[in-house]
Image (cartoon, rainbow, N blue to C red; front, top):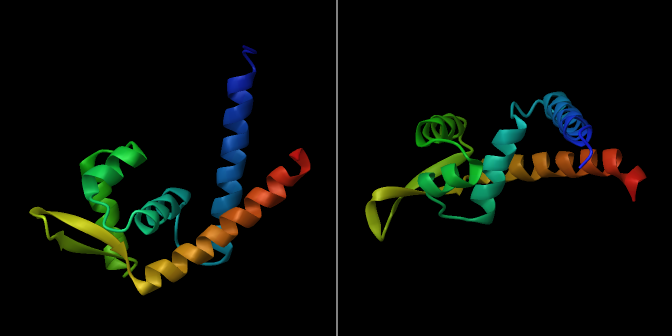
Length: 120
């Protein structure tokens, strides 16, 4: 394996992340790429619980709980008691959260196409 590969991949990743953040800021969405990922996971897996979200994001429960509270405060996510386990909550996007998520996904798709189209 080429020893220069990992730093090069990290540089590409950082460039993509910076570019996506710039586009999110230009659209005044007040989201980070990880926020968009949270919204995406909740949209794709309606009813996802905090523990599973944390596992999929490779983040601890405290960090995920803070993030969900923040997104709830912005009316993007709502928690509902799990009907089969009253101790846990299920996560869902609000209508506003879904609209913001779709807008953010369109931005990410556009940035991806712009950056990687020359490679195909």
